[in-house]
Length: 521
Ligand code: 6LW
Picture 1 (cartoon, rainbow, N blue to C red):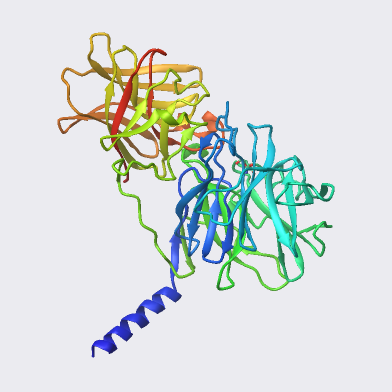
Picture 2: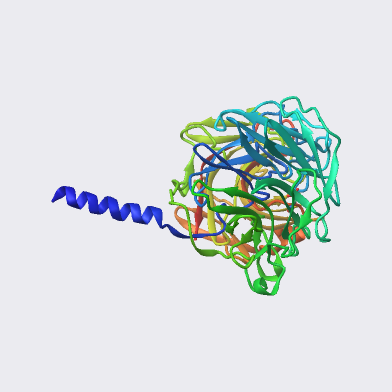
């Protein structure tokens, strides 16, 4: 009897496994643009661009293309990634990841380090990647295609796509760069990738720019260097159409395609979840769509070339990944791979002490396009609550430490503890919006007590407050839209940062953070 039950259970479990149905987009929420995906022996690997943040190029792993876990970052050393002066339009642009013959390759551009293309490689994607192999072919959005022991590189120098053959271990360019396609006439043909199927080389690109007109188009040729002929049914994915005019997902583009273990085809792409007025603050996120790709046929994305938040389609068997705890503490004395710094951090300013994260304050402010003492995680939900318990050790008026809703050096909302002249402290709420810096509120704290700084948000507002002795005090609210990419500029999304800034070089101020709570509502 017991055995029969066991068989029945296993049977039902298998049926559920085989016929998994439906998933939610985005599959990687928050600022995770320009996704590129590859299949390796044990599952799928995905990378995103990272701009001014260090470490660079987050690396995700999945067994089912739906549930992704960040396992590391590709660029973890200063020798791989120099971010001096980089803002949200600088640093690391669109990467590509490929797996060939036991080796992983990640190729990208650092527009803040001479705009040069380079690749790094590794046999162990959970470990360290190689030093950069610098490449001669310019342009952004480089990608690799491997065939018969040869390695081809495509990129976008502006207006068209070029191809050459390279030696991926030395970077040597083996053939001249050759123009192969300029798209269907949409602006900014970019984000190229090459695939081979049924004897055809397919060239997938984006057009229209990364805003609402963003589209995915495709061309094919019998020869790798062309001539490439466009698909008469282009674009194969866009939300710049009537079918998607009321869809919250906008700006669909910059895609990559992968064939799954079971022969099904899938596309990852970027898009954003729009707020009223087509604004967005969460950055361009990673979405997933099924692709129908018959023999000798053009690929068709999710039936009609649009995608949705709830995808009612069959999936691979699903393997959910562990969720991050709502309260992240620092007792293990590590910052997991999702934590990022602005530009190259000064390592000794980040310490662990008595189970706390200790940030050593420096005079570099959040406005300076340098590397302040700052570390944060992405905002991944419109409706969320973030909180931290912070104590500031300081003898100098003007030293500060707290929480920032950071979009860009010129666009952030800061909620912090500040040292006063008379050895007391205040909670301060400050807005930085372009040329304007505004102190919204200063609340003097009358007694020494543990302070929790609280930020809540919905799609329209951030609400700021603090909690003392278990009592929450709200001190202000501010519109989300002034931090949007449309207003602030750049290619990133909001990062919730912990930071410490001193008023002078001489200050030895530091701040101890007990935890960062992040709760999606
Ligand atoms: C990226 C380009 C793009 O290099 O935006 O949306 C640029 N597509 O392909 C920065 O992410």
